[in-house]
Length: 109
Image 1 (cartoon, helix red, strand yellow):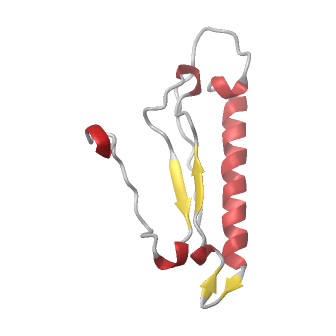
Image 2: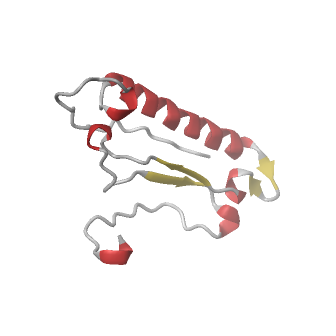
């Protein structure tokens, strides 16, 4: 069974500059777009988890990846990129972990 929890991210608001694109500014519109994408990801993962396949589900034999190319849109900040994996990839993907490489140096980060 897939359990997806959507956490509302507290992103800093950008001041100044014209709001010419929602995706470049952390506005309510930007947050609605991001929430829609995460909801679609969760919807697909749930559908795959309900499809029986062999001894498990289609999700057990799949790897879904969700990522964003920016953490803070108005800064074009790509230092912290959210990346979420769902599925077991046929038992080869170690699941149930959170990895944080922000404090690591060089190639590991």
